[in-house]
Length: 87
Image (cartoon, rainbow, N blue to C red; front, side, top):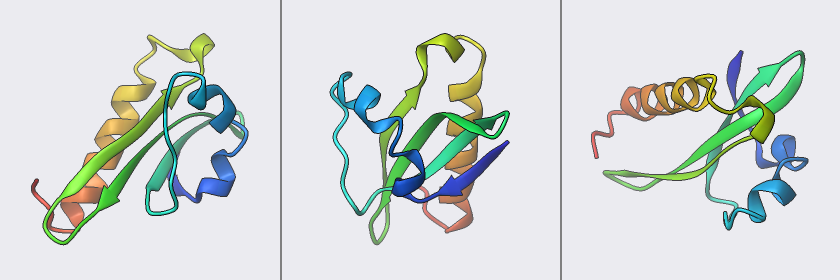
């Protein structure tokens, strides 16, 4: 299951993501992938007036190469498009 989450909900993954040189800020919105009620991946975006910037994609190593990032990215893009942003 994928849903939009607050940065506090992904805080247990942030140390792992920072080891891969991801930077975090309070303006980024996030969605997370849940497996057995545990977050195993997330991706983010920052909204501006007429565009969105894709930020911070991370999936735990043991769950990679299973299409999770693709599903997260599709969800993220659908959220952005639903707001009328095309860039």
